[in-house]
Image (cartoon, rainbow, N blue to C red):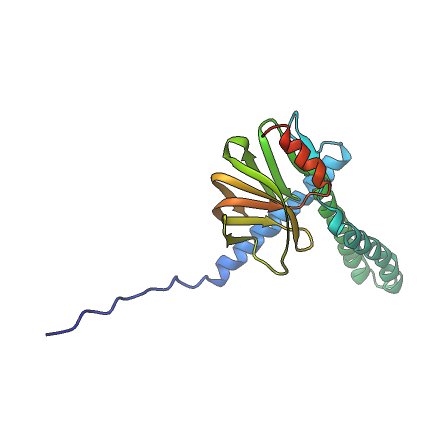
Length: 217
């Protein structure tokens, strides 16, 4: 007589280098498109706020560091240009790269400015620059509460007591917790998931909560 056969487990196939390269290329392309869209929206004063909704900024925790990087990068351009001025083959690529870098960082900041969180008649829109835009309709919202949470190097999605939670952190912090009646589908880059709660940061926390209370008791 032979004993019961051991259960065989299979591990997922390794991700190939080509697949990883394609994924990184798609991420870079989406980021680049988002940067230029943010510049366009700022230039033409078209913040992405639904009709009838109120926008709420969330960029204050990262504003200082982004401005410092932008200023230092802008100062660096003429300094490097002066150093390599006599070598056009080096000077021109470095000049283009420097201008692109400053433009990219400005676009990153403008992504936060032109895509605020929004609270309106249809629900809450939770944003993180040009990268994340999640629709949370009121019929899916169970509660909205002040909830300060600080975690360094935490994953964007993790399991919490109230369910699988997406955290849109600013400098590792959130101060609003939205608990959902039913899971909502979210997409982060190439990854799709369902979450039962969303954490976010609002600069004007009291104003955000007041706006929420005008739509739900």
